[in-house]
Image (cartoon, rainbow, N blue to C red):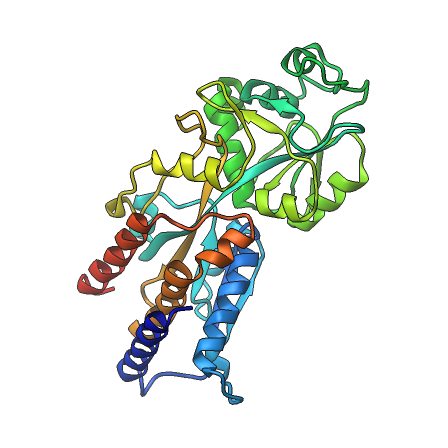
Length: 351
């Protein structure tokens, strides 16, 4: 963390105290939501606490961040609770809903949804899948790893005669939203029957609670296929498939392929940054990219709002290494500047 960022943060913290000196209560910043981004939010929260203590032994509850990784849908629903300061979601709200609910919404980090498998003899990056085959697996049309469509897409790969065991999230999940947003983009049948949402009435398969539940299921069951955040799949050492993109290239999720999907996209602050990053153009673009967004209620008072913004100033300007170390991608500098302008304009408008 640079000295300049530390000085900027301390100045902002002093301003917060001045703005709300008679109202500030020694309470932590409270957030809830995305399991996708929970590891990096934990890192940013520790940095926030470390800078507030500035190397000293004294600490205070309001120098801490409490974040509950309950899933994107639950995080958004908890915004109704007056004690919550922010929600993190991988399923952004439409601009009309953000305005109607009197919220701020902005992206903080980029990630990707990986397709993890447990197939005997198939190592990381060996299996190739495309959108139509992935949709047919989750629709129940392809039920065995030796299916002709899979063998034709993977010549030379010894795919076993083994039933495909489909796993998905049981709880309301932004990862589910991103995955089904992708299936809706590549499969008209999926779009018409199920669409994109944080909760899906799956046509088949087994549900697991949270990312941890999906990881355990994928590890324990041979023949499994599951979707989860790339960094978490990598840390769990689960083999990940290469996906065919719009250009016909088969790519794995990594920082280069994720940023290739992001740079092709225009971000509009007037839409509260609402965007889908799935199925983007470009030969290196990973087709199931996603952003994690932060939602802040605008009725919590200026001091409380500014504390949350201070946390994410640290995240966007000094926490890039934390994100990269967890398999996530920091926002491009131009987007960071746009987010900061969005905050400034919100304050001018009375937010």
